[in-house]
Image: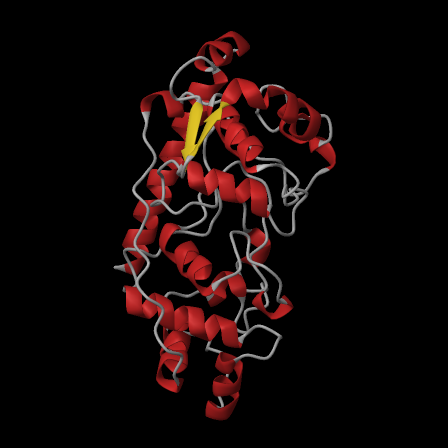
Length: 288
């Protein structure tokens, strides 16, 4: 059941990226200029409304060197960067609150600009005003035809975080084994699983799985809710799928707690795992 669901998600995402690449290969600068004047080239974040044209100067000053004039990720510095800058013409984003394969919300893009992407050259742009960030969200949206025909997905619901207990930490270890997180992230969460060296993003570029034992912020946030969201939405454009069809909400919370126990800093989850004597999952079978 799990294999079929993950295969289905992979097929859907591959088709989405292929369609996006085909569509965007035909996009011209003139078309992008036309989209600049459409309602889609705007943003709404809370009480803020962003205007794409107002962000032109900021984009050219701070963003074009990586993301390029056409937003295709081919800026002057892109050839030296790893990971590569986001190609806005595809409108495929890792950090979203929306289901896999769907467009992110304006809030998602707004938060990514402010937060930056850890372990990349995308810094936290917390020097921008809230209005500048809202305008940049609108500017990003004028690059892709997807924003002209699609609406953002409906954000997933994140249930209240349950209390950390020994039973939940142990159950999270069982989920880690069952859905085979270890194949990419390794038995101890060190990002050294048997598939790690073979992973590629949807454009065929090498990509590394997250190393929980190294600590640090996740690609799309730092809280338990952020980690939960990553499981359930997946990181589109990467091998990290959505597990929304494979694990229940309570199991996702269990997994959050177990993964916290693999991180290097002190935590209740880590203390519980030590007291239980939890050992790394078996990599010779799908069981714990």
